[in-house]
Image (tube, rainbow, N blue to C red; front, side, top):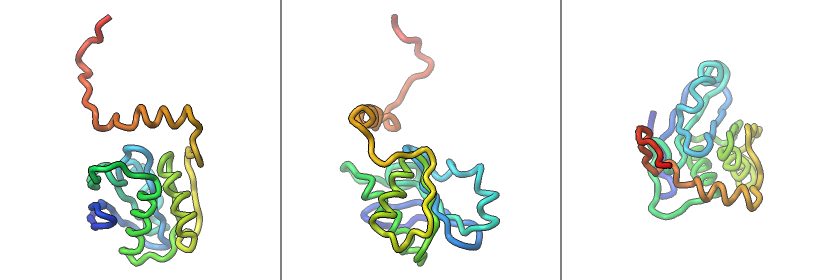
Length: 149
């Protein structure tokens, strides 16, 4: 497993297997381990690239807010740094949004697109839920404390 500096952050990634390139983009607050169950099957046929999105796992995050477009640009920069010109792309949940943005911004790189439990654009209710829960990974919860009634 390695790190590369792209777009002002250190991006943690892993490459395993041989064959056509397949990049796996995880969803909200998921790191490379998210894909562990499917890796043994995938590496038999593909060169599998998985990485931690900015602000997740072992990848760094800037102090400012960031967008799906920036994460798609991170993905494209990672592929370029690895010398990969075309790739199969699989994205789960928010990773599917990143995958779609990658396909729109860099169609020449995307050989195929697989979206798992994803969406194109959230409505107002969805967006407010994401905003409300967006900082959950940074919060600390005491699971041993009994709630007051």
